[in-house]
Amino acid sequence: MSQSRKKPITIVTGCLGSGKTTLLQHILKDETIRTSTAVIVNEYGKVGLDHHLLRKADERTVLLKGGCICCNSREDLEEELKSLLYEDESGEHPFSRVIIETTGMADPSPILFTVLTNPLLQHRYVIDCVITTVDAKNGLLHLKNNPETVKQITVADQIILTKTDITTQAEVDSVTSQIETINPACTITHAVDGVVDRSIIQGTNQREPLSFLQPPPQIHYQINDVSSISFTFKQPLDWTAFGLWLSMLLHTYGENVLRVKGLLDVGEAGPIVLNGVQHIIHPPQHLEKWPDETQHSHLIFIARDLDTSLIEHSLTTFQTFLGTSIEGCDFSSVS
Image 1 (cartoon, rainbow, N blue to C red):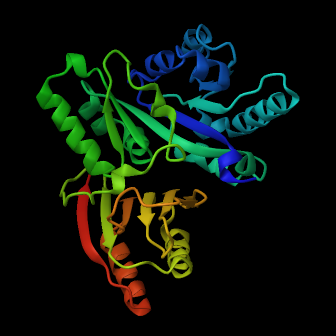
Image 2 (cartoon, rainbow, N blue to C red):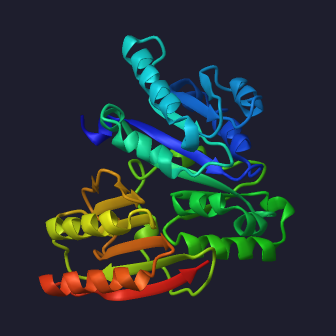
């Protein structure tokens, strides 16, 4: 099955109280989205209050109990996604998209792992977008005290900055700066009272990856032993050789590489969108054309407890061996 025919999954994650449910309530007010979307809510604890709030907007909301999806409910998630496929194919409850809302204590990475490695799910679903809500008022405190917040920001394609209406501009700027330092490839959107453009749930299958048009600036910062490094290539990459190098890198350091994202020129009419979390790489997406006239490859790694200069040295050595130069390499440290 081609990627375009797979059911897209949007994952909504974020720290406790950061506005995930408010965001979903707003999105599900759109009748077209509400009637074509299956929503899975993972609630930590015995009472699924968020589930009942969403039930008012979407009758097909499903609650997964028993704790965090990323820790002990992955089999439940697998079975629920399979059940949704059966209901869709039987005509009982057809749908075109799944939204998964995680508990605020979740590391989203194992959820991606579950979908991308299950033999059935990987052929019927595609992880389309990961949205992370960040509380602008308390974001710095969450980053300091909750390692999960750093992971949630790291894997995000879209960051929704909430509570900006009760936050000073200086606080917003400070939180934004740290988010951009942790994940320079994400797109940041401000929400007021949970209101954003509802198309936010659509990922790169529907929108061009514009965040890679400008390489991230050189930044030096320290946050929880997380570091990032970015590369720009002005010559096409050998896709087979690059894939071999990346596979070896993730085999060796996969648990430490929190995120890899790239827009790569491999000598075709359009670029390849590369997206990975730890040692799991999403199926590469081939675009028909470049988003603009600048056809340069951009590649970003975000790592924890790993000297990113090792990545730089390894890639430089490998590309030199292949006769491909690296230009515009930026290094940034975040912790």
